[in-house]
Each structure stands twice: as C-alpha cells, then as structure tokens.
Length: 238
Image (cartoon, rainbow, N blue to C red; front, side, top):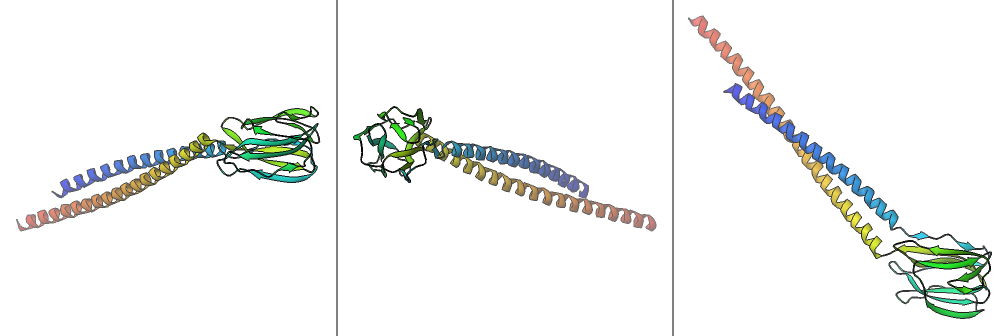
C-alpha cells in the first residue's frame, strides 16, 4: 500500500511538473505578446506625436509662437501682404484666434485654407504665404503629411514676417489608433501578469507535489524497513 501511495504521489508530482512547465510556456508567450503590444503602442505614439515642418525665412524680428488647443487645428487665416507678407494670423476650428505676427502694412485677405499643406516663398523674409504676397524668394510647400493638420506656428516678425514654421498635430484617427494601442498594451500587460501569477502558482503546486512524493517515498522506505525487521523477528522466533 505504501508503495502504491508513493507511486501515485510520484505520478501527481510528474503531472504537476508538466502543468508548471505548460504554465511557464503560457507566461512566456504572454510576456512576448505584451512586449509586442508595447512596441506597437510606442510606434503608434511616435506616429501620433506632434511634429514641426522645416522653417522658412530669416532670423530677423522677434519670436511669436502660438498653438491651437489639443485636438484643434487652423482652418482660417488672416494675411496682410504687398510684395512681401506683412502679417499672418491663424484661427483654430473652435473659433479661437492665435497671436498675430507682423505689422499693419499691405492689403488684408482672410479666408479658409488647406489644413494640411500651405505654399510659401521666402528668402530672408517671407515673400508669399498661401498665395498672398510677391514672387520673390524660393518656393516651398509646408506639408504636415497624411493624418496630420496644421495646429499652430512658430514665427519671427517685426513690421514684416521674417520666418514661419508650422506645427502639425495628429488627426482624430491617429489619436484613436494611439489610444487603442495603449489600451491593447495595457490588456497584454494584465494578461502577462495573470499568466505569471498562474505559473508561480503551478510552480508552488509542483513543489508541494514533489515534497509529498518525497514524503511518500520516505514512508514507503520506512514501511519496507519495518517489514524487513518484522520478517527477521519472525525468523528468530521460528
């Protein structure tokens, strides 16, 4: 009976070891999945990060930087110009006007414009912006790229606009993708934590089963020794 109990305990210990090994594999797979989800979330954050276009123009004048609130973008401009651009000012799609840069010369135009790209001509000053101004300087197109919109600017100006750089913010689709990736990474981390806890529990169960099997083996050995002593005693009595 002791031998049978020891054998059964050994089988249970072996089964517990197999279960612990399987749980460890599942935990490793969950950790790999969590790491992959974290990488995807980091990539989504990089794709959805605020960016700036190259700057065009010179370094004269003073700095004027102004940005729309989070989730807003410029969809309306006020521009004063003659042969050069005298003043620019953007308005966010929530109706908020940003700070103006430049003086009061030239003629005023205001209206809607492309929210992703705007053409400019510049040398040491801004000659043309959004088709307003003269034809001096070199041509360039500020382009925020797919999924991004113009959400502000870094400028330099005095009585004229010396320099323009546009800020580009991610659109709603990119922000949603980044948020979804963050939530997926959080779920993967939680799943990995659960798998790690399950693997630890399996390891503890396997350790208990090994101890129980060892105890059964010791009991079987003790029973065997007791039986041997009993046989010897019986032999002496005969």
